[in-house]
Length: 387
Image (cartoon, rainbow, N blue to C red; front, top):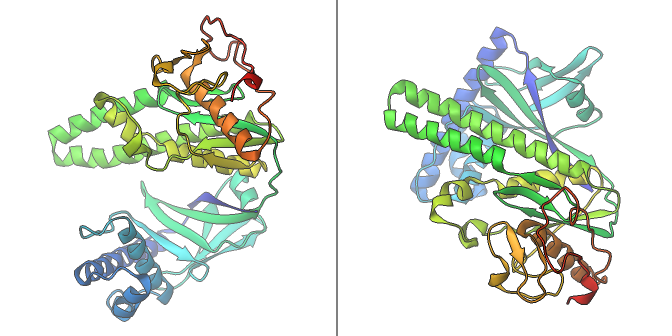
């Protein structure tokens, strides 16, 4: 199975090369904005149709290499797939590269990249560590994104690797949320308090700067946006890595299908800011590709009623969910953390989907220290009794 991964590499250009790349960035951005204007005014969003009406003018107006003109067209067509109700403009300094616009050159003393610009091709050394160097060994990448941030150039290289996915027989249910960032049926738990408090601090600072409205406040807002995004991604990577490291050979990840979650999931009005900015799908994506690197497969199932179904007797009732954190079955009295119950039900759904009997449910955390277990007349979970 092919697995795609993005390797972020810092570039070490000379002053002359930096000027060439910045000039190319401007030409590429101007070309994208020109193509976007034509597409919006003529209501033409198909990349092939857009190519016929913009390609020659794009090359002549902005002196772009042929493939950069094509990449500009594709970027605009992709942007208009998301929304077509207003004119879209390119704001960030970045451009897409294919195998004709860049390539890697391996030398005994390091790796260089050859990149096409509006003037001529140039060779720039990669400032990378052993981790990135190992990922780039013996690969021929066909796609990359060249970016510029904080006066530094970065090359985001997409590499494809073949991985062996093992056939697992031990489902591990994974429930993601806000208060509990991630809870799994194997006993793993990550609380969401740290990232939640950081988001609140960023939101308060952002509100204060927006209210101030000065030029310096707007510049700081722009810097703040990137810092908040990088901070959130760092936490997502740390949590997903810690969880994947807890998995064993033979495990199969079972996660919620989160399509439409921002429209369907219920929450308090006061939680709107937290809920709509929460990276549920991104966390799942990080977990999935990290698991695939170890050969652990992942499946997604419809999460209907997983948080209100008793994993012991199968009773489905909204009354089972006593609070955000407490689940207590009105039928059999089984009681536990609500997020953990949801992960157990995902475990059950995968067993039912695969046609295996519901036996040998993991009991990690049921009576141990990994998760609080409330006093209950039904403290032992025996799914052989349930449906």
